Length: 261
Image (tube, rainbow, N blue to C red; front, side):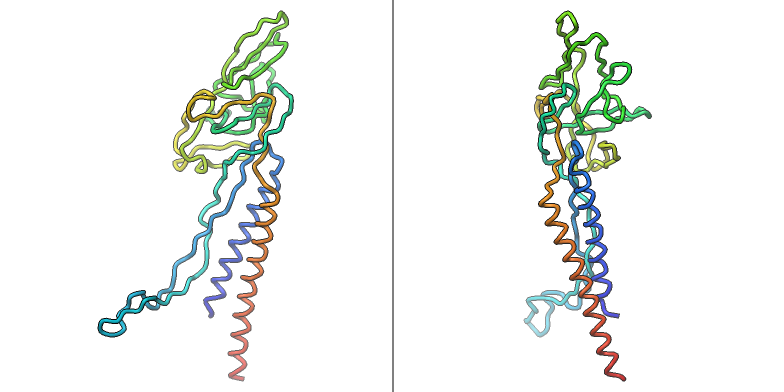
């Protein structure tokens, strides 16, 4: 059987996965804090007939070799943490992180997860939570008599009561990672650390290595529709070309078979 069949099949399967990743990026174009993924490919092993530099006569070596590849494989899906467009919402509990950093979220099992989604709410106890209801860590509670709330660049949550007295009820801490692309996605705009990301380093917004917090704004996804559509067209054409290679191999085998008829 021709090697082109299996080689082209790896290409078609790789392009199918690429289309799946592009589709997920496009589906989340309006998801707050979403970071797009890009697919990385690597070539497979090569069948080596002759190595470069093989001696073909005394003192004579071939300048090149003879090798045939066996296809492509998916190496990784890389999460791209470039900043997304910032949208002014005018809502005091909406925040965006301008620069490096993640909000820390306390899960029901006591573990800490991380997010860039700054659409915060208050629960029945006045605690700041995500849209899903997960509490920020460390916990911050807004008094019931708060007349207004504003969040500073350093993450300080300031409240003003009905008497006009202003006070700080807590500070939103940020976390950062040496390799944020090594985080694993959990859904609900949440990430979990892995050995690839390294441990979380926590600190205050605006300090060295951390971005600042902008109140009244939300960070939209960093998906560029034009880029994704171009990638989609490229993947579709690559899929078609690989299928044509299989068709060409089939026609060559058919011609070979006809010789013996």
